[in-house]
Figure 1: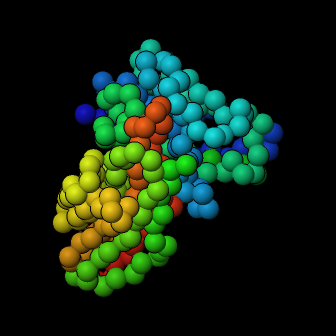
Figure 2: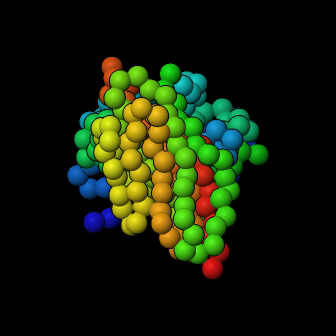
Figure 3: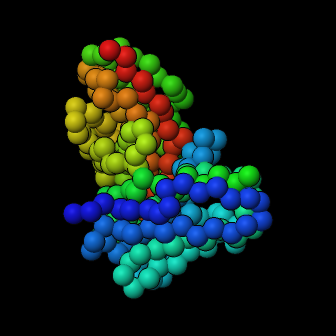
Length: 115
Length: 114
C-alpha cells in the first residue's frame, strides 16, 4: 500500500508569489490534515479536510487555504508569500475524521523556501 | 488553551544507555496522548499512544505511561541504539468540544553514538 505522497518535495519562491502544494493520502483514507513545521514554532496545525469539507482550522491568516477533491487528494495554497512562510509543510492522512485516536500517517513533506 | 511541553534537546547518549524524554501537558477533559518520531529526511511516524489515564503505550522498546495526576507522558527506553537517532514529538488530542486537532510539543532531538 503506497504511503502519503506530497509534491513537490522542494520549492523555492520569492516574496509576494503564491504556491500550491499537493497531497495524496493513503488509498481509502478520507481525512487529510496539513501542518507547518518550523524550528522555532514546531508543528502547527493548519487545517483538516474530510469528504471535501474543511472540518477544523488552525490559527493561520487567510493567505493559507486548502481544498480536498472527491478522490481525497488535497491541495493547500499560500498566497502573497512572506519570508516567514519558509517551512516544511506536512500532510497527514487518516481513515476517519479527526485523526485523534485514529493514527495519522504523514508524508515526507514539502520544503518551501521563500526568498 | 491546550499545550504540550517537552524537554529541550539535543539529547546525546551512548549506545545502550537509558533514555527519558520528558513530556507534560495542559488540557481540559481527558486527552489522548501520543509520541511521534521523525527520522532524518522522513515524515513523522506514530511511535506509541495512550488514550486514558494509567494506560501504557509501548512499541520498539519504547514506553510511556499516561499519568493524569502529574499531567505527564514521559518517553523511556531501556537501551538505545544508533538507529534510534531521530526527533521525538509528544502530542495530544482533545475531544472536548470540537477541538479535534493534534497539539504538538516542539520536539526533542536524540543522537545516539556508537
